[in-house]
Length: 327
Image 1 (cartoon, rainbow, N blue to C red):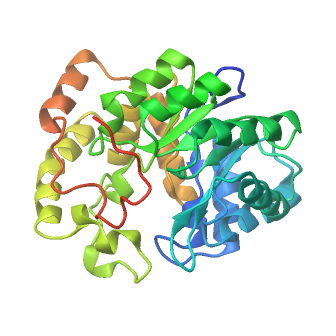
Image 2: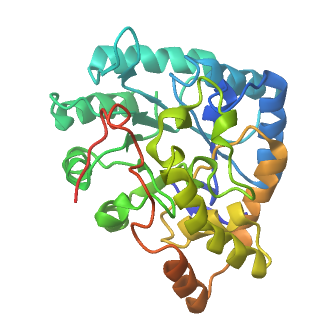
């Protein structure tokens, strides 16, 4: 797999990373063995950038990765996050005490003494970002983290943070049907030498070979209350995306690989992290790195899925809590 740089001064990683939220059962029940098989496939394919969080299953995802690291000793780059306090009432804490404490818990679960990238999972709005970056710089200086990142922030926050100490990566949702980062974040990252890391680059499954069935979503499935997966939006979205699926297949590409390749095509600083717990799915996704679009391909994709085509917002009002909007 081709390599891309994880921010200025950061390590080279495979162009396609792996989001590990699914290891915690967010999109269906799973177990440690399935997670390990997926991680084994990742190394085989050159997918060496693993993304997790302290709150994915309240440590479950990190534990799966940690037990795998302990037995395989692979050469991988690991990112984790902190800043969301989910209980008893969801809030955000970017204080030095909280970030340090949560990082130590993550390091213990992962079985490592440092991580390559540590994100502020959500910004605490009332705390100056300069103060938060001061904490992160101290963690870098102490060797606890290789660099810091920000998640679901606006370009203005990135610029303020980067002026305090260079940011390594920004992680926001980005895909063919979620395009807010095109309003300045993709461009700001390129300008500043910051990696842009799209999560949910396959639209939470909408760009799979077959459409997901909302009637089969589990009780804990995020999509149950997501507007784009609720009627009448869901049927309208499926109708809009069907043409793209036909186009991808006509070019000999799998649908998810083509959708993922679109994110890669947005710039050499873009490193998407599709989430899966399936080794077979990951093998299919890794082929995105082999797809090269012509100008005609780009024009056809833009015609089939024009900017803003999606029916319904990407989040419900409750799900938007903590996300910085702009544009």
